Image 1 (cartoon, rainbow, N blue to C red):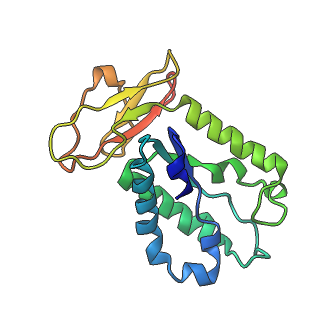
Image 2 (cartoon, rainbow, N blue to C red):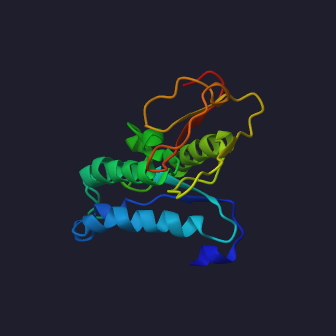
Image 3 (tube, one colour):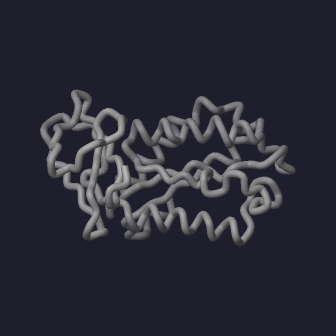
Length: 193
């Protein structure tokens, strides 16, 4: 892959729109294993980057490209969330940034300049305020120390192991990984939960 030659510390993956074409979605059973493999591949790059997955841009109406809105807006969005839950990859909901904004997606699939700015702002907000977690998820055969830090000096960090809302800051609620070795980071920022 081209990304092998770069020393990146962040990889953002946004896939799913072209999967909405009937000839591509006929292989939908490959979506999750392929997405997981891509996340794991990127995590193994020499720079060991943080890997993020995006819920794709919404599709409005029957696309001129044959992309089915229900596949992208519902099915691939759900599968991306499922992959991120299994891999502990943080998710960025680009779809939410453009929901009910059909005018920003004039050809029903590709955002215009204003839509692209909204996507960029959504990415920036998540990436720049996101906690850094090391190691970035996975299954471990022995005890592992997990380090969670934030670029925001006044942030209060929360995490969950079971996917339920975290209700106490890390400093007051240390928890080991669950019996499958899975850790699910939640969020960062002030008192927002």
